[in-house]
Each structure stands twice: as structure tokens, then as C-alpha cells.
Length: 81
Image 1 (cartoon, one colour):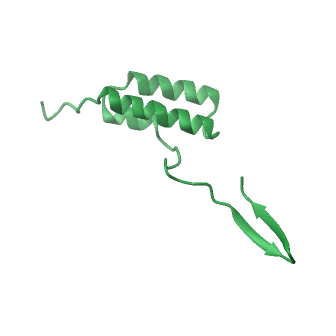
Image 2 (image 1 turned 60 degrees about the horizontal axis):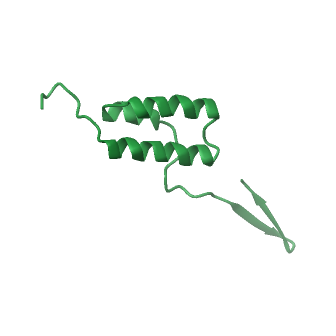
Image 3 (image 1 turned 90 degrees about the vertical axis):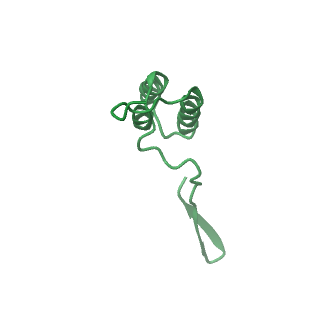
């Protein structure tokens, strides 16, 4: 492989990116329009950089929801989603 050519991604890497986009869409992190745009980028990606741009600014895959619960006078209040 030439040092000036970026490595090519595998079909498995592309499939994993598509799955990550589906998860983010299902969790409400992407609009339908943004999902379509990112899917196009991911499905046509040939290099890691192109694939990275499709996944940019998504929350970490393993990031769980954070809920803050405060107990006030035997009443539980929560904030967050």
C-alpha cells in the first residue's frame, strides 16, 4: 500500500457505522433528513475519514441516560429525559 493513500474500510466497518446511525436515529439524536444524509455518506465511504464524518457529533455508543433525582419532603422529583 502506498504511504500517501489512506487505507480502505471493510464492509463490516461500514455496516457497524450504519447500525450506529440507526441507533442514534432511534434515540432521537438525528432528524430524518440528517439520517438520510449521514447514511449516504456512510454507505459511500471508502476511507476511515469519510466514515468518521458520518458519525461526527453523535453521543458515545455506551453513554447511558443520566437522570438526577432529588428527594424533597418525601416527594421525588426528577429532571432529564
